[in-house]
Image (cartoon, rainbow, N blue to C red; front, top):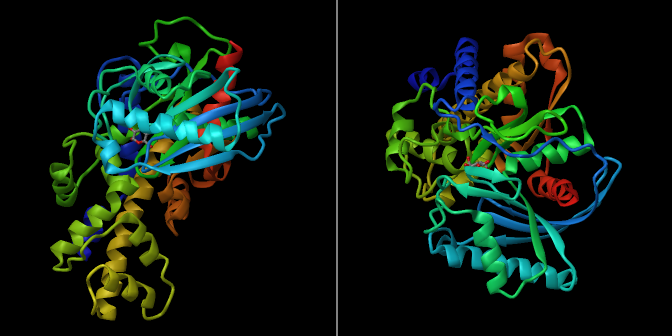
Length: 423
Ligand code: GLC
Protein backbone atom coordinates (compact mmCIF):
# COMPACT_ATOMS: atom_id res chain seq x y z
CA UNK A 1 0.00 0.00 0.00
CA UNK A 2 2.86 2.37 0.80
CA UNK A 3 4.39 1.69 -2.61
CA UNK A 4 1.06 2.32 -4.32
CA UNK A 5 0.48 5.55 -2.46
CA UNK A 6 3.87 6.78 -3.53
CA UNK A 7 3.53 5.74 -7.16
CA UNK A 8 0.09 7.32 -7.55
CA UNK A 9 0.77 10.48 -5.54
CA UNK A 10 0.60 13.81 -7.38
CA UNK A 11 2.40 16.28 -5.13
CA UNK A 12 2.23 20.04 -5.41
CA UNK A 13 5.59 20.01 -7.21
CA UNK A 14 4.32 17.34 -9.58
CA UNK A 15 1.25 19.46 -10.33
CA UNK A 16 3.43 22.46 -11.16
CA UNK A 17 5.45 20.27 -13.50
CA UNK A 18 2.30 19.04 -15.22
CA UNK A 19 1.18 22.67 -15.64
CA UNK A 20 4.47 23.66 -17.23
CA UNK A 21 4.52 20.72 -19.61
CA UNK A 22 0.85 21.27 -20.48
CA UNK A 23 1.44 24.96 -21.29
CA UNK A 24 4.36 24.13 -23.51
CA UNK A 25 2.40 21.42 -25.34
CA UNK A 26 -0.49 23.87 -25.85
CA UNK A 27 1.91 26.36 -27.39
CA UNK A 28 3.36 23.71 -29.72
CA UNK A 29 -0.09 22.53 -30.77
CA UNK A 30 -1.27 26.09 -31.50
CA UNK A 31 1.80 26.66 -33.66
CA UNK A 32 1.20 23.41 -35.56
CA UNK A 33 4.53 22.10 -34.33
CA UNK A 34 3.38 18.67 -33.19
CA UNK A 35 3.30 17.51 -29.60
CA UNK A 36 0.54 15.55 -27.90
CA UNK A 37 -2.15 18.27 -27.84
CA UNK A 38 -4.04 18.68 -31.13
CA UNK A 39 -5.33 22.18 -30.20
CA UNK A 40 -8.09 22.16 -32.82
CA UNK A 41 -9.61 25.48 -33.98
CA UNK A 42 -13.38 24.95 -33.80
CA UNK A 43 -14.76 27.97 -35.73
CA UNK A 44 -16.89 28.62 -32.62
CA UNK A 45 -17.04 32.00 -30.86
CA UNK A 46 -18.39 32.54 -27.38
CA UNK A 47 -22.17 33.21 -27.27
CA UNK A 48 -23.66 36.56 -26.25
CA UNK A 49 -26.60 35.11 -24.34
CA UNK A 50 -28.98 36.83 -26.76
CA UNK A 51 -29.31 33.94 -29.20
CA UNK A 52 -32.95 32.86 -29.52
CA UNK A 53 -35.18 30.33 -31.23
CA UNK A 54 -35.83 26.59 -31.14
CA UNK A 55 -33.08 24.23 -32.19
CA UNK A 56 -32.40 20.51 -32.28
CA UNK A 57 -29.21 18.87 -31.08
CA UNK A 58 -27.69 15.45 -31.54
CA UNK A 59 -25.30 14.50 -28.77
CA UNK A 60 -23.05 11.55 -29.50
CA UNK A 61 -19.80 10.54 -27.90
CA UNK A 62 -20.24 8.08 -25.06
CA UNK A 63 -22.27 4.99 -24.43
CA UNK A 64 -25.46 7.01 -24.46
CA UNK A 65 -26.66 9.04 -27.33
CA UNK A 66 -29.25 11.80 -27.07
CA UNK A 67 -31.48 13.88 -29.27
CA UNK A 68 -32.90 17.07 -27.83
CA UNK A 69 -34.87 20.16 -28.72
CA UNK A 70 -34.12 23.36 -26.90
CA UNK A 71 -35.72 26.82 -26.76
CA UNK A 72 -33.24 29.70 -26.39
CA UNK A 73 -35.00 32.63 -24.80
CA UNK A 74 -32.49 35.32 -25.71
CA UNK A 75 -31.95 36.59 -22.17
CA UNK A 76 -29.27 34.19 -20.93
CA UNK A 77 -31.96 31.61 -20.29
CA UNK A 78 -32.96 28.38 -21.95
CA UNK A 79 -36.19 26.42 -21.61
CA UNK A 80 -36.44 22.87 -20.38
CA UNK A 81 -35.30 20.67 -23.25
CA UNK A 82 -37.23 17.76 -24.73
CA UNK A 83 -34.81 14.86 -24.56
CA UNK A 84 -34.75 11.28 -25.85
CA UNK A 85 -31.93 8.95 -24.83
CA UNK A 86 -30.73 5.92 -26.77
CA UNK A 87 -28.14 3.28 -25.94
CA UNK A 88 -25.40 2.58 -28.44
CA UNK A 89 -24.60 -1.08 -28.76
CA UNK A 90 -21.27 -2.69 -29.52
CA UNK A 91 -22.50 -3.59 -33.02
CA UNK A 92 -23.06 0.09 -33.82
CA UNK A 93 -19.75 1.17 -32.35
CA UNK A 94 -17.70 -1.29 -34.37
CA UNK A 95 -19.78 -2.02 -37.47
CA UNK A 96 -19.87 -0.13 -40.75
CA UNK A 97 -20.31 3.63 -41.15
CA UNK A 98 -23.72 2.97 -42.76
CA UNK A 99 -24.91 0.98 -39.75
CA UNK A 100 -23.56 3.56 -37.29
CA UNK A 101 -25.02 6.69 -38.89
CA UNK A 102 -28.15 4.81 -39.99
CA UNK A 103 -28.90 4.00 -36.37
CA UNK A 104 -28.47 7.65 -35.36
CA UNK A 105 -30.74 8.76 -38.21
CA UNK A 106 -33.39 6.28 -37.02
CA UNK A 107 -33.20 7.82 -33.54
CA UNK A 108 -33.64 11.31 -35.00
CA UNK A 109 -36.69 10.03 -36.85
CA UNK A 110 -38.16 8.64 -33.61
CA UNK A 111 -37.52 11.96 -31.90
CA UNK A 112 -39.17 14.05 -34.63
CA UNK A 113 -42.21 11.78 -34.48
CA UNK A 114 -42.47 11.68 -30.70
CA UNK A 115 -42.35 15.47 -30.37
CA UNK A 116 -44.41 16.03 -33.52
CA UNK A 117 -41.85 18.27 -35.18
CA UNK A 118 -42.78 19.46 -38.67
CA UNK A 119 -41.41 17.73 -41.75
CA UNK A 120 -42.20 20.51 -44.19
CA UNK A 121 -39.94 23.31 -42.98
CA UNK A 122 -36.18 23.29 -42.30
CA UNK A 123 -35.01 22.49 -38.77
CA UNK A 124 -31.53 23.64 -37.72
CA UNK A 125 -29.52 21.06 -35.85
CA UNK A 126 -26.31 21.24 -33.81
CA UNK A 127 -24.33 18.01 -33.99
CA UNK A 128 -22.17 17.17 -30.98
CA UNK A 129 -19.70 14.54 -32.09
CA UNK A 130 -17.19 14.03 -29.31
CA UNK A 131 -14.08 12.69 -30.95
CA UNK A 132 -10.97 14.31 -32.42
CA UNK A 133 -12.38 16.08 -35.46
CA UNK A 134 -10.25 18.29 -37.69
CA UNK A 135 -12.81 21.02 -38.30
CA UNK A 136 -12.91 22.38 -41.83
CA UNK A 137 -15.75 24.79 -41.06
CA UNK A 138 -18.44 25.38 -38.46
CA UNK A 139 -20.49 22.53 -39.93
CA UNK A 140 -17.88 20.21 -41.37
CA UNK A 141 -14.98 18.18 -40.07
CA UNK A 142 -12.96 15.06 -40.57
CA UNK A 143 -12.57 12.32 -37.97
CA UNK A 144 -8.83 12.05 -37.18
CA UNK A 145 -9.07 8.89 -35.07
CA UNK A 146 -11.57 7.12 -32.85
CA UNK A 147 -11.21 7.22 -29.05
CA UNK A 148 -13.10 5.63 -26.13
CA UNK A 149 -13.30 2.20 -27.74
CA UNK A 150 -15.33 3.28 -30.81
CA UNK A 151 -14.23 1.59 -34.01
CA UNK A 152 -16.91 1.93 -36.73
CA UNK A 153 -15.29 1.28 -40.10
CA UNK A 154 -15.02 3.84 -42.87
CA UNK A 155 -15.39 6.94 -40.71
CA UNK A 156 -11.79 7.94 -39.94
CA UNK A 157 -10.68 10.33 -42.67
CA UNK A 158 -14.24 11.26 -43.69
CA UNK A 159 -16.44 14.28 -43.05
CA UNK A 160 -18.89 13.11 -40.38
CA UNK A 161 -21.51 15.71 -41.34
CA UNK A 162 -21.56 14.36 -44.89
CA UNK A 163 -21.97 10.83 -43.54
CA UNK A 164 -24.77 11.98 -41.24
CA UNK A 165 -26.54 13.87 -44.05
CA UNK A 166 -26.38 10.80 -46.28
CA UNK A 167 -27.88 8.65 -43.52
CA UNK A 168 -30.70 11.18 -42.93
CA UNK A 169 -31.45 11.20 -46.66
CA UNK A 170 -31.46 7.38 -46.77
CA UNK A 171 -34.04 7.38 -43.99
CA UNK A 172 -36.20 9.90 -45.83
CA UNK A 173 -35.58 12.84 -43.47
CA UNK A 174 -35.35 15.87 -45.75
CA UNK A 175 -35.73 18.95 -43.56
CA UNK A 176 -32.81 18.71 -41.15
CA UNK A 177 -30.06 21.24 -41.71
CA UNK A 178 -26.89 20.42 -39.74
CA UNK A 179 -25.65 23.94 -39.12
CA UNK A 180 -22.94 23.20 -36.54
CA UNK A 181 -20.56 20.38 -35.65
CA UNK A 182 -19.17 20.65 -32.12
CA UNK A 183 -17.17 18.74 -29.56
CA UNK A 184 -18.86 17.99 -26.22
CA UNK A 185 -16.40 20.21 -24.34
CA UNK A 186 -17.30 23.08 -26.66
CA UNK A 187 -21.01 22.48 -26.13
CA UNK A 188 -20.45 22.41 -22.38
CA UNK A 189 -18.48 25.66 -22.42
CA UNK A 190 -20.96 27.47 -24.67
CA UNK A 191 -24.00 26.27 -22.70
CA UNK A 192 -22.61 27.50 -19.38
CA UNK A 193 -21.29 30.73 -20.88
CA UNK A 194 -24.77 31.52 -22.27
CA UNK A 195 -25.92 31.76 -18.65
CA UNK A 196 -22.69 32.80 -16.91
CA UNK A 197 -20.44 35.06 -18.99
CA UNK A 198 -17.35 34.50 -16.80
CA UNK A 199 -17.23 30.86 -17.90
CA UNK A 200 -14.08 30.31 -19.95
CA UNK A 201 -13.15 26.62 -19.76
CA UNK A 202 -15.28 23.61 -20.72
CA UNK A 203 -14.26 20.20 -19.39
CA UNK A 204 -15.57 16.64 -19.72
CA UNK A 205 -14.61 13.96 -17.22
CA UNK A 206 -16.86 11.09 -18.22
CA UNK A 207 -16.29 8.05 -20.43
CA UNK A 208 -13.52 10.14 -21.98
CA UNK A 209 -11.85 13.34 -20.88
CA UNK A 210 -11.07 16.60 -22.65
CA UNK A 211 -11.24 20.39 -22.37
CA UNK A 212 -11.60 23.55 -24.45
CA UNK A 213 -11.21 27.33 -23.97
CA UNK A 214 -11.39 30.52 -26.06
CA UNK A 215 -8.03 31.57 -27.52
CA UNK A 216 -7.11 34.87 -29.18
CA UNK A 217 -6.87 34.42 -32.95
CA UNK A 218 -3.41 35.99 -32.74
CA UNK A 219 -2.41 33.23 -30.33
CA UNK A 220 -3.36 30.49 -32.82
CA UNK A 221 -0.19 30.63 -34.90
CA UNK A 222 -1.37 27.86 -37.22
CA UNK A 223 -4.63 29.69 -38.04
CA UNK A 224 -4.58 31.18 -41.53
CA UNK A 225 -8.32 31.62 -41.89
CA UNK A 226 -10.30 34.87 -41.79
CA UNK A 227 -10.80 37.07 -38.72
CA UNK A 228 -14.08 37.10 -36.80
CA UNK A 229 -16.27 39.35 -34.64
CA UNK A 230 -14.67 38.66 -31.27
CA UNK A 231 -11.07 38.06 -32.35
CA UNK A 232 -11.25 34.80 -30.40
CA UNK A 233 -12.02 31.21 -31.21
CA UNK A 234 -12.71 28.21 -29.01
CA UNK A 235 -9.90 25.65 -29.14
CA UNK A 236 -10.66 21.97 -28.62
CA UNK A 237 -7.51 20.88 -26.79
CA UNK A 238 -8.10 17.10 -26.98
CA UNK A 239 -6.29 16.89 -23.64
CA UNK A 240 -7.00 13.17 -23.39
CA UNK A 241 -3.93 12.63 -25.54
CA UNK A 242 -1.57 14.58 -23.23
CA UNK A 243 1.40 12.31 -22.61
CA UNK A 244 3.80 14.20 -20.35
CA UNK A 245 2.69 12.40 -17.20
CA UNK A 246 4.50 10.02 -14.86
CA UNK A 247 2.93 6.62 -15.46
CA UNK A 248 3.00 3.45 -13.33
CA UNK A 249 3.44 -0.14 -14.45
CA UNK A 250 -0.37 -0.50 -14.23
CA UNK A 251 -0.89 2.37 -16.67
CA UNK A 252 1.58 0.77 -19.07
CA UNK A 253 -0.20 -2.55 -18.83
CA UNK A 254 -3.58 -0.93 -19.45
CA UNK A 255 -2.22 0.98 -22.43
CA UNK A 256 -0.66 -2.13 -23.98
CA UNK A 257 -3.96 -3.99 -23.75
CA UNK A 258 -6.06 -1.10 -25.10
CA UNK A 259 -7.20 -0.76 -28.72
CA UNK A 260 -5.15 2.44 -29.12
CA UNK A 261 -1.75 1.83 -27.46
CA UNK A 262 0.41 4.92 -27.04
CA UNK A 263 -2.58 7.25 -27.49
CA UNK A 264 -4.88 9.04 -25.04
CA UNK A 265 -2.49 8.61 -22.09
CA UNK A 266 -4.14 11.25 -19.88
CA UNK A 267 -7.58 9.89 -20.75
CA UNK A 268 -6.44 6.44 -19.61
CA UNK A 269 -5.46 7.88 -16.20
CA UNK A 270 -8.49 10.12 -15.68
CA UNK A 271 -11.66 9.01 -17.42
CA UNK A 272 -14.50 6.68 -16.55
CA UNK A 273 -13.75 4.21 -19.28
CA UNK A 274 -10.41 3.39 -17.64
CA UNK A 275 -10.33 4.20 -13.90
CA UNK A 276 -12.08 0.95 -13.01
CA UNK A 277 -9.67 -0.95 -15.24
CA UNK A 278 -6.66 0.50 -13.40
CA UNK A 279 -8.21 -0.48 -10.08
CA UNK A 280 -8.84 -3.97 -11.49
CA UNK A 281 -5.16 -4.31 -12.43
CA UNK A 282 -3.94 -3.14 -9.01
CA UNK A 283 -6.32 -5.49 -7.21
CA UNK A 284 -5.21 -8.37 -9.41
CA UNK A 285 -1.65 -7.61 -8.39
CA UNK A 286 -2.77 -7.96 -4.77
CA UNK A 287 -4.31 -11.34 -5.48
CA UNK A 288 -7.87 -10.04 -5.46
CA UNK A 289 -9.68 -10.72 -8.72
CA UNK A 290 -13.26 -9.58 -9.13
CA UNK A 291 -15.08 -10.76 -12.28
CA UNK A 292 -15.29 -7.19 -13.49
CA UNK A 293 -14.51 -3.84 -11.99
CA UNK A 294 -15.85 -0.56 -13.29
CA UNK A 295 -15.45 3.09 -12.40
CA UNK A 296 -19.05 3.09 -11.20
CA UNK A 297 -18.03 0.46 -8.62
CA UNK A 298 -15.25 2.71 -7.36
CA UNK A 299 -17.81 5.46 -6.79
CA UNK A 300 -20.04 3.09 -4.84
CA UNK A 301 -17.21 1.75 -2.70
CA UNK A 302 -15.78 5.19 -1.94
CA UNK A 303 -19.26 6.37 -1.05
CA UNK A 304 -19.80 3.55 1.48
CA UNK A 305 -20.03 5.24 4.89
CA UNK A 306 -21.07 2.15 6.86
CA UNK A 307 -18.68 1.16 9.64
CA UNK A 308 -18.13 -2.40 8.47
CA UNK A 309 -18.24 -1.42 4.77
CA UNK A 310 -21.37 -3.47 4.40
CA UNK A 311 -22.37 -1.98 1.05
CA UNK A 312 -18.92 -2.73 -0.29
CA UNK A 313 -19.24 -6.32 0.90
CA UNK A 314 -22.53 -6.72 -0.96
CA UNK A 315 -21.11 -5.15 -4.11
CA UNK A 316 -17.97 -7.30 -4.04
CA UNK A 317 -20.13 -10.39 -3.57
CA UNK A 318 -21.98 -9.45 -6.74
CA UNK A 319 -18.62 -9.07 -8.47
CA UNK A 320 -17.65 -12.64 -7.64
CA UNK A 321 -15.93 -12.11 -4.27
CA UNK A 322 -18.46 -13.60 -1.84
CA UNK A 323 -16.34 -13.63 1.31
CA UNK A 324 -14.29 -10.55 2.03
CA UNK A 325 -12.84 -9.53 5.37
CA UNK A 326 -13.15 -5.98 6.64
CA UNK A 327 -9.41 -5.66 6.18
CA UNK A 328 -9.67 -6.56 2.51
CA UNK A 329 -12.59 -4.21 2.02
CA UNK A 330 -10.65 -1.35 3.57
CA UNK A 331 -7.74 -2.16 1.33
CA UNK A 332 -9.91 -2.18 -1.80
CA UNK A 333 -11.47 1.11 -0.77
CA UNK A 334 -8.05 2.63 -0.27
CA UNK A 335 -6.92 1.47 -3.73
CA UNK A 336 -9.97 3.12 -5.29
CA UNK A 337 -9.27 6.33 -3.36
CA UNK A 338 -5.66 6.48 -4.49
CA UNK A 339 -6.57 6.04 -8.14
CA UNK A 340 -9.44 8.53 -8.19
CA UNK A 341 -7.43 11.13 -6.26
CA UNK A 342 -4.65 10.96 -8.84
CA UNK A 343 -7.21 11.48 -11.61
CA UNK A 344 -8.68 14.51 -9.85
CA UNK A 345 -5.27 16.10 -9.26
CA UNK A 346 -4.14 15.57 -12.85
CA UNK A 347 -7.35 17.15 -14.18
CA UNK A 348 -7.01 20.10 -11.79
CA UNK A 349 -3.40 20.67 -12.89
CA UNK A 350 -4.42 20.82 -16.54
CA UNK A 351 -7.28 23.23 -15.77
CA UNK A 352 -4.77 25.35 -13.84
CA UNK A 353 -2.48 25.38 -16.87
CA UNK A 354 -5.30 26.57 -19.15
CA UNK A 355 -6.29 29.27 -16.66
CA UNK A 356 -2.75 30.62 -16.41
CA UNK A 357 -2.68 30.86 -20.19
CA UNK A 358 -5.93 32.84 -20.21
CA UNK A 359 -5.21 34.95 -17.12
CA UNK A 360 -1.60 34.56 -15.87
CA UNK A 361 -2.22 36.23 -12.51
CA UNK A 362 -5.72 34.83 -12.01
CA UNK A 363 -6.85 38.42 -11.60
CA UNK A 364 -10.45 37.74 -12.63
CA UNK A 365 -13.08 35.18 -11.69
CA UNK A 366 -13.43 32.01 -13.72
CA UNK A 367 -16.24 29.51 -13.99
CA UNK A 368 -15.15 26.11 -15.25
CA UNK A 369 -18.06 24.23 -16.85
CA UNK A 370 -17.67 20.52 -16.20
CA UNK A 371 -19.80 17.60 -17.23
CA UNK A 372 -19.35 13.83 -17.28
CA UNK A 373 -20.20 10.87 -15.09
CA UNK A 374 -16.95 10.84 -13.11
CA UNK A 375 -17.18 14.49 -12.10
CA UNK A 376 -20.89 14.27 -11.44
CA UNK A 377 -21.21 10.92 -9.72
CA UNK A 378 -17.93 10.14 -7.97
CA UNK A 379 -18.39 11.11 -4.30
CA UNK A 380 -15.07 12.90 -3.72
CA UNK A 381 -13.81 13.81 -7.19
CA UNK A 382 -15.06 17.40 -7.34
CA UNK A 383 -13.76 18.12 -3.87
CA UNK A 384 -10.36 16.60 -4.60
CA UNK A 385 -10.14 18.87 -7.65
CA UNK A 386 -10.95 21.92 -5.53
CA UNK A 387 -8.31 20.96 -2.97
CA UNK A 388 -5.76 20.53 -5.74
CA UNK A 389 -6.57 24.01 -7.11
CA UNK A 390 -6.02 25.39 -3.60
CA UNK A 391 -2.64 23.66 -3.49
CA UNK A 392 -1.73 25.33 -6.75
CA UNK A 393 -3.24 28.81 -6.44
CA UNK A 394 -3.56 29.21 -2.64
CA UNK A 395 -6.07 31.96 -1.83
CA UNK A 396 -6.64 32.83 -5.49
CA UNK A 397 -8.32 29.44 -5.93
CA UNK A 398 -11.36 31.20 -4.43
CA UNK A 399 -11.77 32.98 -7.78
CA UNK A 400 -12.24 29.69 -9.60
CA UNK A 401 -15.58 27.94 -9.58
CA UNK A 402 -16.07 24.38 -10.75
CA UNK A 403 -19.64 24.23 -11.99
CA UNK A 404 -21.50 21.13 -13.08
CA UNK A 405 -22.92 21.73 -16.56
CA UNK A 406 -25.53 19.02 -16.79
CA UNK A 407 -26.38 18.07 -20.39
CA UNK A 408 -24.30 21.04 -21.51
CA UNK A 409 -22.86 19.25 -24.51
CA UNK A 410 -26.23 19.02 -26.23
CA UNK A 411 -27.56 22.40 -25.09
CA UNK A 412 -24.38 24.11 -26.27
CA UNK A 413 -24.66 22.50 -29.69
CA UNK A 414 -28.13 24.03 -30.03
CA UNK A 415 -26.70 27.46 -29.15
CA UNK A 416 -23.85 27.14 -31.64
CA UNK A 417 -26.41 26.03 -34.25
CA UNK A 418 -28.39 29.20 -33.54
CA UNK A 419 -25.38 31.42 -34.16
CA UNK A 420 -24.37 29.53 -37.29
CA UNK A 421 -27.91 29.44 -38.72
CA UNK A 422 -28.18 33.25 -38.35
CA UNK A 423 -25.01 33.66 -40.34
C1 GLC B 1 -12.42 11.77 -26.00
C2 GLC B 1 -12.60 12.49 -27.34
C3 GLC B 1 -12.88 13.96 -27.13
C4 GLC B 1 -14.03 14.14 -26.15
C5 GLC B 1 -13.75 13.40 -24.85
C6 GLC B 1 -14.87 13.50 -23.86
O1 GLC B 1 -11.26 12.24 -25.41
O2 GLC B 1 -11.47 12.30 -28.15
O3 GLC B 1 -13.17 14.59 -28.35
O4 GLC B 1 -14.22 15.50 -25.91
O5 GLC B 1 -13.52 12.04 -25.13
O6 GLC B 1 -16.05 12.94 -24.33
